Length: 544
Image (cartoon, rainbow, N blue to C red; front, side):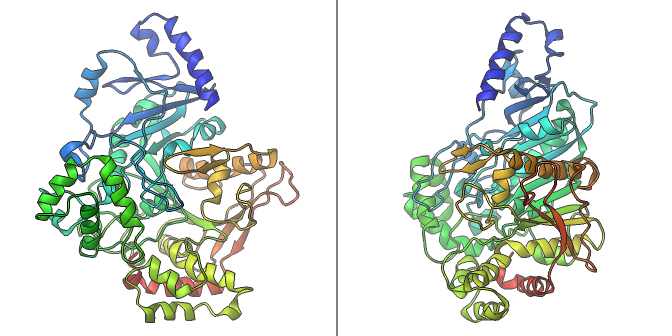
């Protein structure tokens, strides 16, 4: 961004004028010493530094393709730096992208992408013990570039937190699966999810150098990032890596078994030119294949009309031992406070046939089961067939995670839920669709093809609403409660409970006043509760 570059130039001139004394570097507000390397970031606001592209694991190259990440070799980083300050003022290469299916082709990006962007108050250092937000981006597990969701403005508004945004492997490079991965000699299930875990472990070891408190970490994600956050709640890991959760529009994609993914693996291998021999032979071929062979192969698989098309997390019996909905319903999840919600008009399906859409999204659903789902959404309950379709698909795909997670969490901890009700003004629609809040929370950001994005100007009322959202989010990060540090004009966000299913509706002031909040509290309807309890009961066929 332009202000990044301008501040970077001023900072570089300042550093050059200082000669090279290490004592001076320790006082520069945009240089941090991790103990194994010094990094120089962008002073993107007078009170904000963005350290971009900090590695958290070894590059997953060569034989490491399709395997879990290896812990960062800090000695290697130290030797490579040779005593010099490492430049961290440019966004790193993003992870290799898949096609969105909207006329683009995937393949842009790099395999050497296991990095984090860190946003911190200027001058923050070890001992500050600032609460930490770790953000996991969305994109269906097959695309997404953290550059499109910058956090400089969040720190500028609230310079009392540290924010970490994670790059993790996507599509086939992150989530290739075959039953033969049960033998670690062949590879690892859920490599892209293990990247996220490794990033959280790096945060535990090193975020204190940036002023962060590793004992006060909130994980946050939207869409596939929200799905990731839900999976972290139930994942079998050997460490406590977070103390709070913010889950936005949880993508309830099926957690297939490796056996269900076997046809996908074979189709991918054949398309990449690696279709012959045993599975270990095919994997050896795939590890030697160029990205120009793998990118079309993963896009080809995604274009198929039936079955498990996208490369996504699997039920591996190790990290994930059951479907998350079932584990959450049974109380088998991390006991932490949660904020969870969705947008008003979410659905990831198109068309007019509810049954066909559900069968496409959940490949294990039968015709009879899809018909039973449709019966739960009689047209008489909705103002139009379009709203009926939206609810019947969107609740299973996204919306009901709000009810399922909040109901379980509220039995033993605190839970807050929301309905985001402000359309993306660049969408050309009054419908509040999936990811609408991203535009508001990230400087008018819209993502494009192959890691690209566009930022559009925001009006004063939009800026005011964005600051209200950011205050709620960072209040939860700082205090475990969205109300503690909310803006004075914002309403009290009432907790969710099974007895009173309160949630906040987040929206601009209808009269376009910047000094008055448009948000208000409502109760989840009895109809939505009943339908989501039905969705929850279908965990076996939905596999999520």
